[in-house]
Image 1: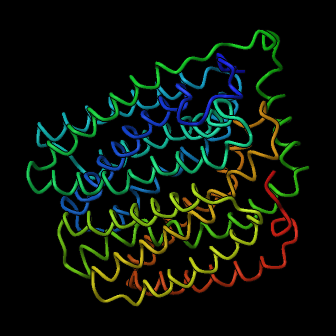
Image 2: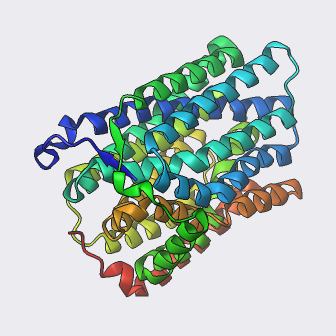
Amino acid sequence: MDAVVKQDQLKVPVFKNRNFILLLVSALFSSPGYYVYLIGAEWLMLSINDNRFYFGMLFFAASVPRLLLLTTGGLIADRFNKRTILFCSDFSRAILIAILLSFIWMDSITAVHLIILAACFGISDAFSYPAMNSLTPVLLEDEQLQRGNSFMQMTTQISPILGPALGGTLIALLGFKGVFTVALVMLLLASVAVLFIRLKEDKKDAERPSPWEDFKEGWNYARKNELVVSIVVMAFFLNFFFSGPLTIGIPIMVKDVFHGDAVNLATVQTSLGIGALIGAIVLATIKLKKPGFIMIGGLIALGVIYTITGFSIHIYLTAVLVALMTFTTQFVNIPLITMLQQTTDKHMLGRMMSFLMTVSTGFVPVSFVVTSVLIAIGISIQTIIIVSGIIITLIAIYNMRNKKILGFKFE
């Protein structure tokens, strides 16, 4: 278990907490670096292969190892130094991009190479996600969590602004070699920044139960937490109808429907980050008294906007709509994470974060496959998005009856 080296921590404001600032700095390099890589990999796949099924497999390959290993990542986050885990994650991603660059320099890159590298990125994600989210409440006090989570969301949501904008520009100016080189450097800087976070091992953790006992403890803890169960069940189905169609759909709409280029894709993906950033800023300045109502209301708005996006006939209208979507997702994600953190014992946070991610995203790989297959058999991506948006709206309305979520109040 990690324990922060405390310097009268109760009196340290969020922005004077050295460890938390270093975590923010690391996220400011890591997340944009990942998005620079991602837009480069997406456009490279669309450029070297006309079969859109392979494009869907790019996301499927990343999601499967992420899903299978998240529980392991949570166990490791609770048993080992979270700073070391984050360093290994960012550094390994930099190595993977270096391998990709070597294939590009040799002019031997194929769709199979991109899919394999995407799977390796998924493995890294499985360990970084629970470590990052369980480290935040270790560095901050309970009353600082909503604000701290909002600032963490801001740094990660700047990523879809800076990352695609920088990535699209670099593709246009320097080609794929330039975009992947910048991504590599950013991930290296992130891995260095996280090393300066001061953590020490808790001496009481000398005698630990086995990993299997840790897993059973985490499972039983989650199963008895009615709030966690309610959130996970809802997210399980929502992610199926949202993740695949949106993630695969935006690049395909830009390339095949709007006949755009890498800069156009960067414009739409940047709007995703702008909307999310504005939402995070709003939530950083207000205190939610009934987060459950806000979360369900945000889901309803998300479903409606998502449906309208399927009818869009212009690339800039699509950019506005996806910005509105990510704005509303912040009113779902930030209350959800804070609710989970406040109701979970700190020594269980890594396992609870990985459990939430594992179970709630269990259908995501299937979503990628189903979306890819539907596109391959001739169903338009717009139709898939419209139907998915309607279903999300109906699921959100149904959860207006969920008293466990609606009745939650922040401390």
